[in-house]
Image (cartoon, rainbow, N blue to C red; front, side, top):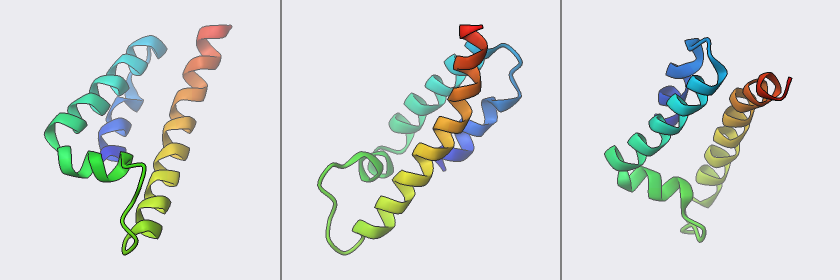
Length: 77
């Protein structure tokens, strides 16, 4: 869900605008899906689904990192 919203900005050519759009998507997702957002960002997960959320958070972090690194590289050039 969040990953899909973040990927929508991948076609924006300007790196700064892409970063802004990713931030807007992230905040919009948090407001539109408060329960899911809390589950993704909860620091003390429930035991029954700890592994699922841990894997989801790790994948999301990897995805966001792979989207942001090229932007930062472009900006620093």
